[in-house]
Amino acid sequence: MKLLLPLLAVAALSACAKTPSSIPAISVASVEYAGQSCKQLAKELQSVSSDLANVETKQRNKVAGDAAGVFLVLIPPSALTGDYAAEIGRYKGEKIALERAQSRANCT
Image 1: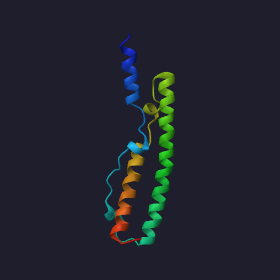
Image 2: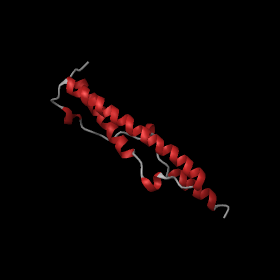
Image 3: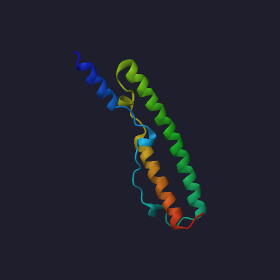
Image 4: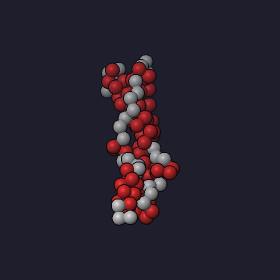
Protein backbone atom coordinates (compact mmCIF):
# COMPACT_ATOMS: atom_id res chain seq x y z
CA MET A 1 0.00 0.00 0.00
CA LYS A 2 2.86 2.38 0.78
CA LEU A 3 4.25 1.84 -2.71
CA LEU A 4 0.91 2.21 -4.44
CA LEU A 5 0.34 5.87 -3.56
CA PRO A 6 3.69 7.12 -4.95
CA LEU A 7 3.16 5.07 -8.11
CA LEU A 8 -0.30 6.55 -8.58
CA ALA A 9 1.08 10.05 -8.06
CA VAL A 10 3.81 9.51 -10.68
CA ALA A 11 1.29 8.08 -13.13
CA ALA A 12 -1.07 11.00 -12.57
CA LEU A 13 1.64 13.61 -13.00
CA SER A 14 2.92 12.00 -16.19
CA ALA A 15 -0.55 12.25 -17.71
CA CYS A 16 -0.84 15.98 -17.02
CA ALA A 17 -1.24 18.49 -19.83
CA LYS A 18 2.01 19.99 -21.12
CA THR A 19 2.73 23.69 -20.87
CA PRO A 20 2.38 25.48 -24.23
CA SER A 21 6.11 26.28 -24.31
CA SER A 22 7.00 22.59 -24.05
CA ILE A 23 4.88 21.57 -27.05
CA PRO A 24 6.95 21.31 -30.25
CA ALA A 25 5.86 22.71 -33.60
CA ILE A 26 4.49 20.32 -36.18
CA SER A 27 6.28 20.63 -39.51
CA VAL A 28 4.33 22.63 -42.08
CA ALA A 29 5.71 23.26 -45.57
CA SER A 30 6.08 26.93 -46.44
CA VAL A 31 5.25 25.96 -50.05
CA GLU A 32 1.63 26.12 -48.93
CA TYR A 33 2.02 29.90 -48.77
CA ALA A 34 4.03 30.36 -52.01
CA GLY A 35 2.64 32.96 -54.35
CA GLN A 36 0.96 35.01 -51.64
CA SER A 37 1.76 38.69 -51.38
CA CYS A 38 3.53 40.14 -48.36
CA LYS A 39 0.23 41.69 -47.30
CA GLN A 40 -1.55 38.32 -47.49
CA LEU A 41 1.27 36.62 -45.58
CA ALA A 42 1.17 39.29 -42.86
CA LYS A 43 -2.60 38.95 -42.52
CA GLU A 44 -2.36 35.15 -42.32
CA LEU A 45 0.49 35.37 -39.78
CA GLN A 46 -1.57 37.73 -37.63
CA SER A 47 -4.52 35.31 -37.75
CA VAL A 48 -2.39 32.26 -36.91
CA SER A 49 -0.63 34.16 -34.09
CA SER A 50 -4.00 35.15 -32.62
CA ASP A 51 -5.31 31.58 -32.87
CA LEU A 52 -2.10 30.29 -31.26
CA ALA A 53 -2.41 32.76 -28.37
CA ASN A 54 -6.03 31.71 -27.78
CA VAL A 55 -5.29 28.00 -27.76
CA GLU A 56 -2.22 28.53 -25.54
CA THR A 57 -4.49 30.24 -23.00
CA LYS A 58 -6.84 27.24 -23.10
CA GLN A 59 -3.86 24.89 -22.64
CA ARG A 60 -2.59 26.89 -19.64
CA ASN A 61 -6.07 26.52 -18.13
CA LYS A 62 -5.82 22.74 -18.69
CA VAL A 63 -2.42 22.70 -16.96
CA ALA A 64 -3.87 24.57 -13.98
CA GLY A 65 -6.90 22.28 -13.89
CA ASP A 66 -4.64 19.23 -13.96
CA ALA A 67 -2.61 20.56 -11.03
CA ALA A 68 -5.80 21.04 -9.01
CA GLY A 69 -7.20 17.67 -10.09
CA VAL A 70 -4.05 15.80 -9.13
CA PHE A 71 -3.98 17.60 -5.79
CA LEU A 72 -7.62 16.81 -5.02
CA VAL A 73 -8.27 13.38 -6.56
CA LEU A 74 -4.92 12.22 -7.99
CA ILE A 75 -6.34 12.29 -11.53
CA PRO A 76 -5.57 15.04 -14.06
CA PRO A 77 -8.82 16.04 -15.80
CA SER A 78 -7.06 16.37 -19.16
CA ALA A 79 -6.37 12.63 -19.06
CA LEU A 80 -10.13 12.23 -19.46
CA THR A 81 -11.06 15.30 -21.50
CA GLY A 82 -7.95 15.84 -23.64
CA ASP A 83 -5.97 19.00 -24.20
CA TYR A 84 -4.91 21.37 -26.97
CA ALA A 85 -1.39 20.09 -27.63
CA ALA A 86 -2.07 19.05 -31.23
CA GLU A 87 -3.60 22.42 -32.08
CA ILE A 88 -0.69 24.28 -30.48
CA GLY A 89 1.82 22.20 -32.43
CA ARG A 90 -0.04 22.85 -35.68
CA TYR A 91 -0.31 26.62 -35.12
CA LYS A 92 3.35 26.82 -34.15
CA GLY A 93 4.25 24.99 -37.36
CA GLU A 94 2.05 27.27 -39.45
CA LYS A 95 3.61 30.33 -37.82
CA ILE A 96 7.12 29.10 -38.63
CA ALA A 97 6.10 28.29 -42.22
CA LEU A 98 4.57 31.74 -42.67
CA GLU A 99 7.65 33.46 -41.28
CA ARG A 100 9.79 31.40 -43.67
CA ALA A 101 7.53 32.35 -46.57
CA GLN A 102 7.81 36.03 -45.61
CA SER A 103 11.58 35.74 -45.52
CA ARG A 104 11.70 34.08 -48.94
CA ALA A 105 9.43 36.78 -50.36
CA ASN A 106 11.67 39.50 -48.85
CA CYS A 107 8.79 40.93 -46.84
CA THR A 108 9.77 43.57 -44.27
